[in-house]
Length: 292
Image (cartoon, rainbow, N blue to C red; front, top):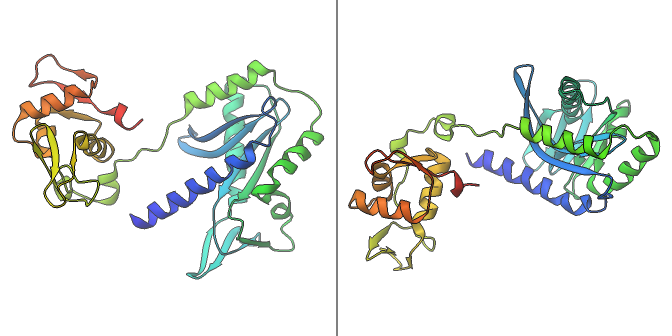
């Protein structure tokens, strides 16, 4: 779990670091979509960033790798050498080419005018060393560091002279892809093989991570005596992310370690959550708003 979290944080930070360079792209000419996942041919393909212009599209595969990178076309692999030793990864150039293929098919299916799609692999860590096989021409052409994004954009802009998309068609592509987007949201417990009974429940103190008790409409930490009126909100957010976005009064009572279902009823109602079910006993509250 910690390893996967570290990879996610590295990728997230890499994508965020590119925000600085996106601002140099002409806003009137380029629309940007980030982190979309679309089903095609019974499988999902994911796009880190798509830049939409009237003349061409640019697909960005973003990598926040550290160490020394070597793009090997002989075996279609990326070799990283770092303090951890040597690691082998799938070649992101081939990865982004597949994304281009699927995106082309999706746009054709929805009657979008045919438009050139360029692909780039962006290495966001400024301290990462990048090299490739002498024969790997695509690596020299398609792999860039973040500061090169604007010059690559200008290169494509000079290459493609003809406007293919009207403004309304660019907006249509953005609406279409956002509609088709299906974010990856696995069942975390099943994914890691964790039983629900193994979870640490209750309301945890934000100061020292100790269990808090409900005393006189407040949450009070048994260790450092920190108090809070809203500590249960974080616990319910955890419930929504880890267990389910639906919760009953009894499930809330058990999870927050409350003494009565009436306390759970009061806390859930105070959050103005949408719910289904007429009676208090059968009511199911929907926690989606806590994680959006």
